[in-house]
Length: 382
Image: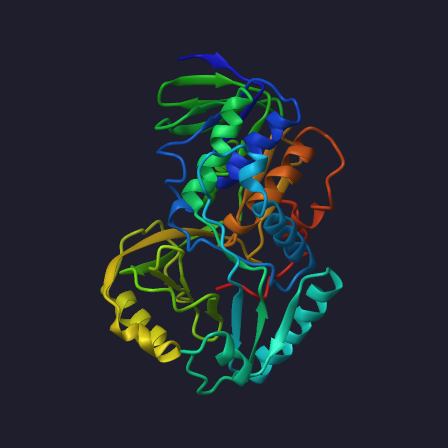
């Protein structure tokens, strides 16, 4: 299988499919998207499915705000006959230390300047929002009713089907083994089935982006980190918002069909490609979740799974081109919040790849910031 393409996108998660659709929507032709498994088989299909505007940096707030506004009309935009199960039940972010209170108020200042309808709530008000919340030790919280949940498989499927209608070729179960370059220019990709010649490669392969970039001599500062999640049996609706505690490193939400999905971050997790579940996670998750939300102790766990964050040193994505290697573009290193900013990221990346002015600047996410030491730390991630 030797063929040619004008654009090759490596990675069939929501980011890759969003970029493919937006490129095709703008008139780009001969686009090939390659995924080594099924669409959304990587980090997208293993994520917690939450979407929120409540970040601590202006650009992430903007990415999320625009993305959520796009989620609100995405089924119509993509002419998707099914539902992406978008639900805006809000996010309740809990503060347990004075330092968190201070940071949350700084975050609110950023959010309010951008028109995000978040607000500070007292422990008593937090309990009104989530009646079964245990307020022991709680100093306050922030809440934004525009935040919510969306089905990552349906969202990816919606982008992929819309991209196909616009002429994008999607190759699943096809693994890219290396990128190809000559004289400082991208010339193609090598797959298990042969070479695809192309002058443009967009790399959005999550935690695996680093090893592929290395095949053309680019050292991406991305490390994999396992994050585990569990899902319970479905019960009657009892919780509207996602409840998130950076102090406990967890998030927990009830999805539209009634199950609770919850995840836990572990700062001591080894940086390796491990997607196996552990009983230690189940034990710690149960202890922390039932402390914050006591009635969850009565629920039975259906299953648990793990996925990989693609972490960067500042917990921020890498967007844009690689200097010195013409035709090479990056959309990786999302550090756990790629799904929720995928709609706007796809639009901005398409603009950038085609040489158009971007909707707002993405230069702070460029690859060379790590060499310059100009990190742009996002304080609000689990």
